[in-house]
Image 1 (cartoon, one colour):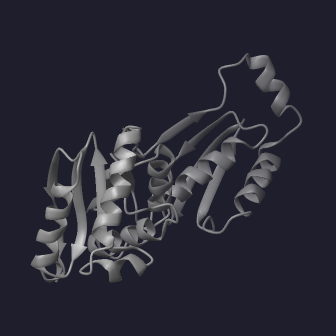
Image 2 (cartoon, rainbow, N blue to C red; image 1 turned 180 degrees about the vertical axis):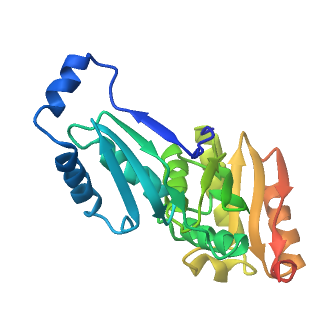
Length: 250
């Protein structure tokens, strides 16, 4: 499980614990103005840093201003930190407020659904409170959890991101069960039309031979049938049916 990652008001990013003589050699000949110009040029390579201001004092850079998202904060700090001659970075950057928590939830959900490697065997939920986003759920590969968190951090108004997405354990048997369940469910006449959608709404999570059904279906008959199919599949030890109906979401 990935650990909590938050953005405090003031973030100190120390470049190196190396000898002072080495740092002195790096900054020799570079004035505060020259270093500031070099940092501004690095930030101008990307959009979204127009409202960032900075001061430089003997290699210590202080960032102020407003950016759109948590990703922009990370990028501003990282690009500054990698500028030759910078000894440390202090960030007082603030993040632009989103339209509302509901708007933010919808936009982050769009990012997740648009992720090209997000499959019917992954299932990610999110909660938003005052711009603070918590991601939960399951993915079959660790890189997917990392990429989904990165995509979410791009959304305007995301102030902090708590990535609690669980990476499912590697298991040949679980993998075989996923395939069997997907074929059994999506080949059934009540679900076959869903299989042709870009993002099929019914997701199948398998962990240690236990199944969690998530997503949205149209009718109670579909919800009951999906659970019945899963329970009838050889090797399944239990089913947690979390499917919601369209009517319950409106």
